[in-house]
Length: 190
Image (cartoon, rainbow, N blue to C red; front, top):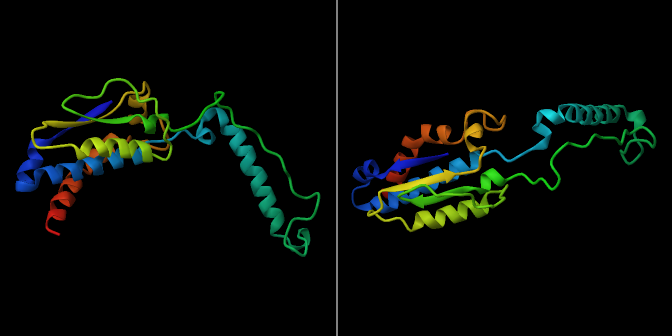
């Protein structure tokens, strides 16, 4: 999955500051796509629906116990033997860590990046820094900036596979592209 920015249209709006405007727009779009990218959350997986429901029921039960002052000690804790200390574990692959999709966004010039980065970045800092570094090297002799994610499940995620991003990341971001252009051009006036 990838998309290309048509930089020629932006250059007209930016006049003599095209490079600065394109860098701002590219960075804003990259930031949006990365931040809208879902990070695996086993509590949301269908296979874990029963465990989630059970764990929430236990928390709700314990919270309800706390509403009765007779159940509390002088320190405000639940009296011994009242609290339920049970939970169900979530099912997930051994060694699973969320953030592979978010960590695989790549920026390139002219052609889409090939392959995966292998990066796991649930917080997105490393991925955003890597992409921003590439965008910072942009100049007006470059025809296009590509923002690409090559993990095998990127297309399903874009088209509703994740409850965290049911409308996708790229489509939602590109719906706001005009705003990014306007903001970048307005920033020149400051």
